Image (cartoon, rainbow, N blue to C red; front, side):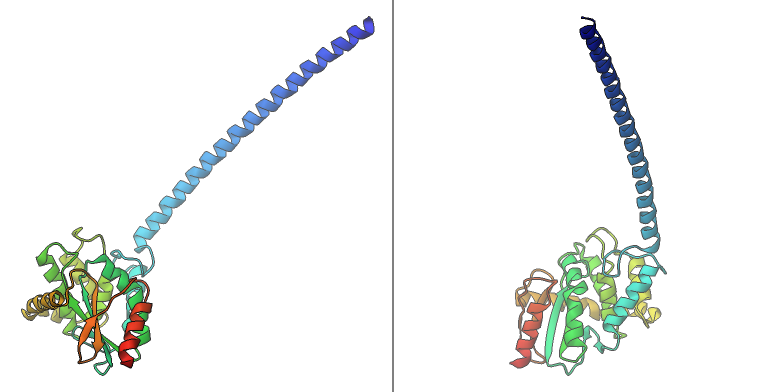
Length: 277
């Protein structure tokens, strides 16, 4: 009997010890969980601070790549990079007024655009870059920029911004102005196109005489050009931008259909087709 009782007592002791061990294990797990939560909270705090610092740095330096639209801070690294990118794209290519490329190029592409049009901006920052390098620089293609109001809701603002670009064309630097504008677009009709913005673009154009540019902006021929371009677009059946006409230089121009503004392939195919015709 005593053996059975001892065994029973021993079993109860073992159970109590077991229960104590289980409680210790549970308490330890809970403590470890609290520690992990504390560390995660601390880590989250640190990451939050890092994110804030990165945002502050991007804002201070103009942030993003030169291919990302949005106004840049004056004299910032991003502005320097942006100007360098546009200069590399256009440097050495002849310009004349609204035209980019050699007058002797066998193919002409007419590009109807609105400087606040986000789709024009997308085209200029992607497919157009490759078309310029592949066809314009070697003298195979000439591109003429025409004005068509679509995204800019205020006619006066439209005329002012387009005239600013055409005035740069008086110094054969219109395409620098266009490309710098398209790379610094903000939300259309958000009021970002101010006199300060237009003058900042002029300052960024390499070699532009800003005094002459300011004087040229009052030239009445630009207002006439905007009206003429709108009529040409209407005659071609265009109601959106960007829209394109293509043909042999000096010959009949036809509508160019495209599937993607980022993909230069359909444009390249049309250019090569016209060149071989």
